[in-house]
Length: 205
Ligand SMILES: Cc1cc2nc3c(=O)[nH]c(=O)nc-3n(C[C@H](O)[C@H](O)[C@H](O)COP(=O)(O)O)c2cc1C
Image 1 (cartoon, rainbow, N blue to C red):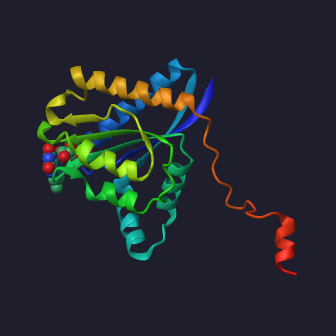
Image 2: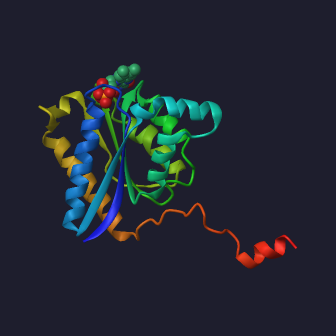
Image 3: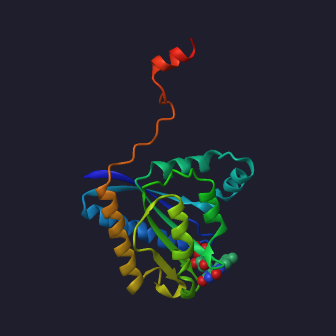
């Protein structure tokens, strides 16, 4: 079995959160689909609600503090990302966008990403295609073809039902295949020399 890192970003604000519920069901389905391909997914969930103050501080100061910096590093080191936002005013939420506003623009380059959104009404399902997809195109991420939208009516009890379950499983299988095709991400070493030791000595002489 090979191991890969999955980071799940959930921007729900309610407690309990339907966005988190969708994020959890997507990550469970991704773990199962990856398992079928001989991959163990080590999953970390980033709840943006818990980082809301630090995200605002970063916007104001230009510097990430502890837990936000840690979450940003986890995203950059991830082999794949699942990103789920509630639909607010027919688009992603402000908190969701703000997290990506303070993320390094290369952090998602070439990385497989599965997108999801929750909403009150199915009428706003295109938010995935007119708002979330273009954002991840900017980051040069590899977004899997199936994005998963869940309106209030899609939930039966506490879990995905019918068509929603089918879409979750199809999206998860697409993500697992993208992970399987790639080499693992090796996190950048912050202490690595960017020039040779000899060049450094010469630059001081
Ligand atoms: C400020 C605000 C704006 C919203 N705007 C929309 C909207 O434009 N379209 C929609 O279908 N639902 C909208 N909703 C409903 C949320 O998208 C929906 O309840 C979502 O699942 C909440 O996610 P959560 O439970 O993870 O917080 C809005 C909710 C809030 C609080």
